[in-house]
Length: 619
Ligand code: ADP
Ligand code: ZN
Image 1 (tube, protein in one colour):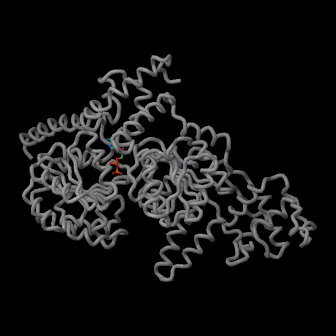
Image 2: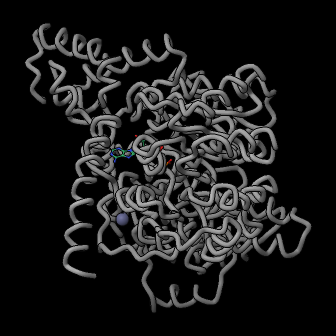
Image 3: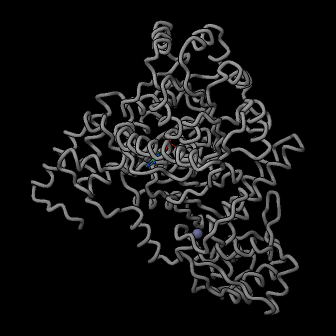
C-alpha cells in the first residue's frame, strides 16, 4: 500500500469516525460502543458481509441499526421471532428511526402500506419473517426497491446442525443472488463452528468479517445456593428484590402454578406461565410482565423465547436446568440493559433423581444418552466450588482471563470452607450401623438425636452415633449428605427407597486418611452483598418516580416501558440529575428524538423532586 492510499484511507476513516460516533450519540444516545460493535458497524459501512456470534444482550441491534440510519436505502431484517417484531420496531421508532414490520399479524391493507413505504424508500429498517421472503410479490417489490443491507437474525435457524432449524430459512440462500451488491450480515447467539460453516455456506457469504464475541456477561452475578426449602428461599429472594422484574424457572407446570399462587398469597405481584395455560391467559401474563404490571413471572422453560425485556433484574432457577446451554440462555435473559442483575440457582443433590426420572422416560437411546450427558454437566457445574463464570465460559470453550471474576458467589467469598471430617464420620458410621438400609432423613434423625417414631421403633436411639451431632442444624446435615454424594463417598440407591450406601472412598474417611471440607455460606457477607446489588447508590426515591412516569408514558403510547427508556437511562438520570436539555443529552440512551419526545417531562420531574428539598446529592 502506498503512502498516499494510506493517508487517504485514514482521511475517509477519520471522517467516518465523526459521523459514526455522532450518530451513536445523536440517535441512540450512547457515549461509546460495546465490545465488537464498532468492528461490525464499520465492516457493514464498507459493504462487507458479516458473520457474528454475540450473546444475548450483547447489543446486536445497534450493529445493524446504526448502518441502517447512515446508508441510503432500507435495511431488511429477517427474523423468525414474529412476536418480537412490534417491540423492536417500537424501540427503533422511539429513537426516530423509520422502521416497520411485515408479518401475518397485520392486515392486508397495512401490509400494502408498508410495501408502499419500502418502494418509495421511506424506511430505514424493515423487519420481515422468513416465509415472507419466499413470496413472489414481496420479492418483486423488494427487487425494485433500494435495499442497503440485509440482516439475517437468529441465523442458526438456517442450519440443520443448529438446534432450531427452520425450513423457511433455506429460501434465504437467494439473498445474495437477488441483491448482489448489498452486504449481508448474519447474527446468532449460539453457533458451534460446524453451524457457523453451514450458515456461511448456505447464505453464500463473501469473505465475511467473522466475529465471535465473548460470551461473558460481566453484569450478571452468578449465585448457586443450597436448596433447602424452595418456597422460603424464593420469598426471601423476592423480598431482597422488591419491585424488581424477575423470572423464576421451575420444571413442572404444577410447580409453576403452585409457586405463583404461593407468592401471590404472600403479596408479591407474580403470574404463572406454562404451555398448559390457554393461549389467551399465557399472552396476557406475558404482556403484564413486559409492561411492568407484575414483577415476577414463574415459568417453565417455555417462557422467554419472545422476550426482549431489557430490565430483568434477576433470574432464579428453583429447579435444575437440563443443560448448560439452557442455563446460559435462561440466565442470559437477565440484565440485557447492561445493569447489574442476579442469577440464582437453588441446588441440592436431592433434586437429581427427579430430573433423572424425566430423562429416563426418553425412549430414543441416543437422545437419552445426550440428555444424560448434558445434565451431568449441570450437576458438576453446580457441585463445584470453582468460579462460576470461569466454569460457564469454559463449557463454551472460552478461557476466562482473570483469577477472580469478582461477580459470583465463589469469587466474592460468600462461602468459607469448614472442616467437617468428624461430622462426616458420624454420618458414615450411622449408615453402616443401620446396614445401609435407610434414606438421608432417617440417618440425619439419628445423628441429631430425634425422638421421631421411626427412630424409636427401630431402636436406633441405642446406636452409638445417636445424638452425636445434636449441636448442628438439620440443614447442615442435609448439606453434608449432599457433599458426600458429590464427592462420591456415599451414594443413594435408585428406585423407591433411596437408601444411602457407602462407596469405597468412605473407608479412607473413616480411617482418617482424608479430610472433608465443605463450603459454608457466610450469612453476614451474603446479606451485605445482596443488598449492594439490590439497592444502588442513586436517589432511589427519584428513580421510582421516574419509573412511574415511564410507565405512564408507555401506557399512553401502547409500548413496553423499556422502549421509552431503559433502567440504565433512569439510573443515570437519578444520579446525574439533569435539569436542562444539554445535561439530559449526557444520559445514556437519550438521543435527540427521545430528548424531544420525553425530555421535558423527565426534566420537570427531576426539578420538582430537587425543589421539594432534596439536595440532589448521592446519599
Ligand atoms: P441483543 O439483541 O444482542 O440481545 P440488544 O440489541 O437488545 O441486544 O441490546 C441490549 C441492550 O443494550 C439494549 O438495552 C441496548 O439499548 C443496550 N446497548 C446496546 N449497545 C449499547 C451501547 N453501545 N451502549 C450502551 N447501551 C447499549
Ligand atoms: Zn467468579
